[in-house]
Amino acid sequence: MNSVYDVMQLLKRFGIYVYTKDRLADLEMMEEEIKELYRMQIIEATDFQIALLLLRQEQGKYKR
Image (tube, rainbow, N blue to C red; front, side, top):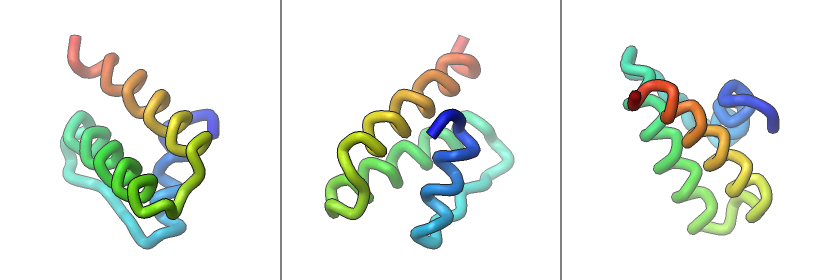
């Protein structure tokens, strides 16, 4: 995974589509969905960590 788009594709594999017309809200919702997939042991720890890192980096661009 190299970008938020890759995180979106990961979520899409599990039937999760996130789009609210608010980029920051989308990123926060994707983070919650990634956390839930990890809690349910559906995704591996490395995918979880990389996805969170990418999402939080992108969120930082919008919270300034």
